[in-house]
Image (cartoon, rainbow, N blue to C red):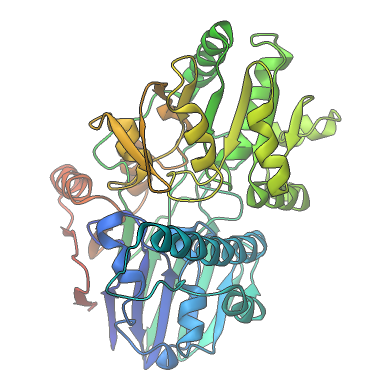
Length: 468
């Protein structure tokens, strides 16, 4: 059987998810994500390790930028096949890619002006990875598939998308390759969600796989209990409100923002926090919230019951959507305490940087992190508190605001939940541990090997494995 996999991203790091599967003469790319860690960002501009024109199809697990963010570059450099994914993922990915293109173009424009003002000349011209026009060219290439339906890609290859419970529409991908009388099953976990997460269904479980490619973002860590989230969130809001500051929350536009709104709505209904003006200052998050309204069939039973009662899990009185730049700028003029939810989630770009500039030096304000902060990102630097000053838009600011983190919000399964997910699979031929910082991935691989006796490895960037 002609079957092999090459690790083109998310190998001993968390972003840039991308894998090449070659089977029966067909080339498949699973995910094509953007690198967000500072030390790996240059890979975004590197030529693809395999010719984009030789790739037959792309399979996309979900619409986070670190899984879909390089698709326009792939198309720009010659890919002309189909991008297979679920309906909600297709809708959200189109929003994400256009937003990513706009941010890149704007960031380059801003940097050019700043560099000119500072008299700086870089060794390379400042250019975006791709433009809005490039992003638009890949949108017609999306093909949607419902969960649990088998799709025949030809040459003895079939694909099934399964609910990953990570974000709306997220998938695990089951690929079956048949050659003669032999069949091999490969499962790509994508990002695995947590059981009992609000709004979403629990992650799908599998009984059989020959090969498993499993994420390990939190492979060496445990989250707080989800039951603790409302208590911590209420404490932070109330304490900040008492001293007259703002609660600034860097949030991922997809899922995290919607879950946060769901939690705030619950606290307001129970009168555990005062009625405050809350802003979603992210055009992308606003658009994604609208996609949530179009896919109510993907919600879990609790969210369905809430909808039947006449309420929506992604809304509450006092929630303001800031769509325009002027509306975003006006937030700084608001009196009293506000809750400001803005992207990007790791503080690498977007409107959150402007709100950090306005609040990071205010002792009465709180910067609240509710999502994973990859190594080298501005969010990680602030969270770790190792630097007294941080750099935003070419300026230095002292960190005087209170820094808080609520771990239970994570949309990624933790060590115990990942272990439990793998436990339902009968011993595979091999487990590849990916999508985790090297220490997390290595620790998790060793943990699973000792616990199960499975054959386990942690591939490095551009490693290739023959699948027997």
